[in-house]
Length: 74
Image 1: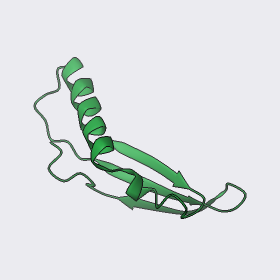
Image 2: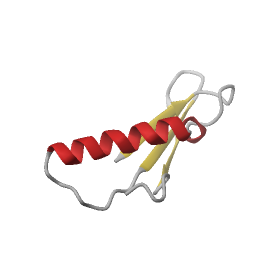
Image 3: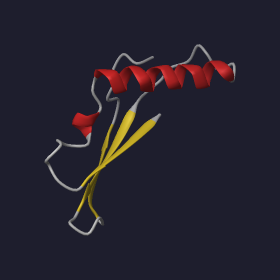
Image 4: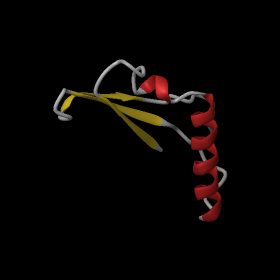
């Protein structure tokens, strides 16, 4: 599963910082529900994030792919 977060400034923290404990629980629950509905459990799950930094015009300035942000998420 991949979560994409975009930010155009540091006022509210980085995109990666936006994935706190509550968001982590919701991501895990959503993934487990989706996999269960399709009869795909048990299986290994990895949660990655793509952090997009935007310039003042809202255009992408940088991309960062962070693997396994919720280690132990399976």
